[in-house]
Image 1 (cartoon, rainbow, N blue to C red):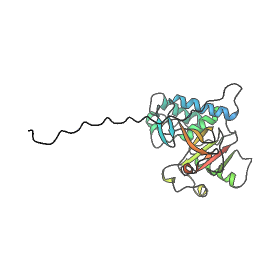
Image 2: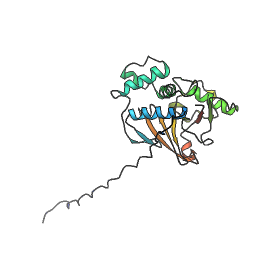
Image 3: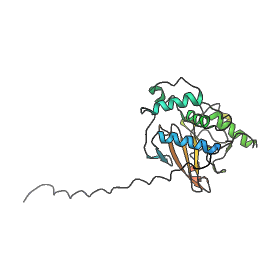
Length: 239
C-alpha cells in the first residue's frame, strides 16, 4: 500500500466569463448638412476613431484602443495643444504623456474650434474657468449666455453639451455650490455625443490616456442619481 497524501482531485475547468457587451455606439447623422452641434459631434467621433475607439462604461474600461504614447497619437495630442489652444510648448512625446500636461481641455478646445463650435468657445488649458462661468450664468438666470451650468440631475443634456467632473485634490472638495470660491481646480469635461432616455454617451480627451467614448446611466435623459456623484455639472452650450 502506498503511503503519503492521497492524490489531489483534478482541478475543475475554470468558467470563462464573457466580457460585457459594449454599449451601442452613436452614429453620426447622414444626409443633410449637419448643424453646429452635429459638426462638433462628428469632429469628436473622428478623433475617437483615430484612437481606435476605446470605450468606458461607468468609468470602467471595456474596450482598449490606442493611447497618447503611441506613434501617431502623441503627435495628434500635440496638435490639440497647438491648434486648440495656440500652445506650442508641448512638443515631445515625453511632454505629451507627462502628468504635468493633462490635455482634456486642449482636446475640447480643438474640437470646438475646428468644428466651428460656440462663438467663441472660451478655450483654455483648464476647464475650471468655463465651469465657474457656466454655473454663475445659470444661478444668476443669465439665460442667453453661451454656457449654462446646470446641476447634473436637473438637465437632460443634448449632443454638443458638456458633462464635467473634478480630478485630483478637487474630488470631494469642489462642489456645484462652492466652485466659485476656488481660483482653480483640476477638472475634466467630456462632450456629449449621444443622449437617450436611459443612457448618455460622451467623448473625452485624456480619458484613460486616450480619446475615449464613455457611457453613463440616465433616467429620463438626465444623469442617473447613482451616477451623479461622479459629476460636477452639465454645461448647456450655445452651439
